[in-house]
Each structure stands twice: as C-alpha cells, then as structure tokens.
Length: 199
Figure (cartoon, rainbow, N blue to C red):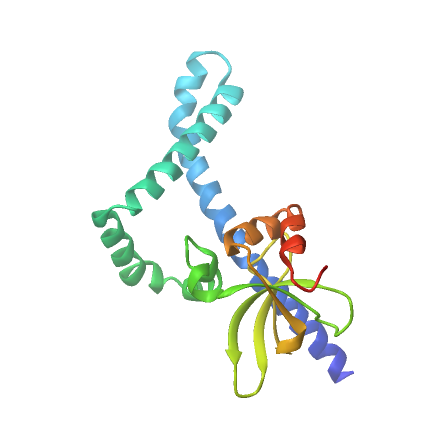
C-alpha cells in the first residue's frame, strides 16, 4: 500500500514539475494579452467589430512585443537589465527559482552547456533505440550518463546511467534533435542514418 502511495505521489510531482514552465508561460501571455486587448478595445469598437479586431490586433501586438523583448535582451543594456531584474525581483517570487532551474538548460543556447552530444541508446539492452543527450561520462567506471527526453516536451524525461557499449554517439546537432523531439519524432530519419550501429 505504501509503495502504491509513493508511486502516485512521485508521478504527480513529476507531472506537476513538467507542467510548471508551460503553466507559467500561459499565465504571463494571458496577462499581457488582457492588457493589450483592453488598450485596443476602444479603437476596435470604433470600427464596429470590437471582438474580431481586438483579438487580431492584440495577437499581433503580443507577438511584436515578444519579438522586441527578445531583440532588446540581446543588447548589452538589455542583458544588464534582464540580469538585474532576475536577481533582485523575479528571484523573490515563490517558485520562480525552481521553474527557472527546470527550463534553464533549454532556454536560448543553454542546452549547449547541459548536453554534450546526441546519442541513440539501447535503453533496454535490446534492439530498441532511444534518442538521448549525453550529459556526463565516467571513464573509470565505463558508464555514460544520458538524459532521455519525452516528446513533445523536452524539459521532462529521465536520467539514465548506461554502460558505454549501449550508447551510440550520433554526429547530429543538439538543436535539430530538440526540434525533432518537439515534433514528436518528425525528422528522426537524419538521426537514424547517422547512427554507426545501424548499417
């Protein structure tokens, strides 16, 4: 009975953690969309179609704002402001640090530090191959540590330690594999064709 409860609690926690980044994103986008829609509504009402025009203009405005923020953060002053905001404001929000740590490896080029390379692994020590990212390696023990992501959300998955013989390194960019995972396997042809194990 205790094992059953632990199993349920473990999976509930894992699901909650996996959904946190998406929930935060939806919350922030919904908040921004609401503000923009309230500003645009009087203009849309003037044209006689407030609902349709408001939604279209609010969506376009939201995309433009997101683009401009991304552009600004790439500049020196933008990076400085983002770092200060993150340290002195956002880090004070309960739960923000946990969410940030979860999505950090996948934000921008963060995955380049977390994922050393791409591999297809014999997770079950048989002919089944699973897409994974190499994260560490123990030369002394002959084991490789990999992160096996789940599609279409690569921020969730499992960490597995496998014998080196079950890890088949593939010369494919990490970025293209992340795109394949988000697309639930679309584009895997290139990964399979590059795998030395598959003749």
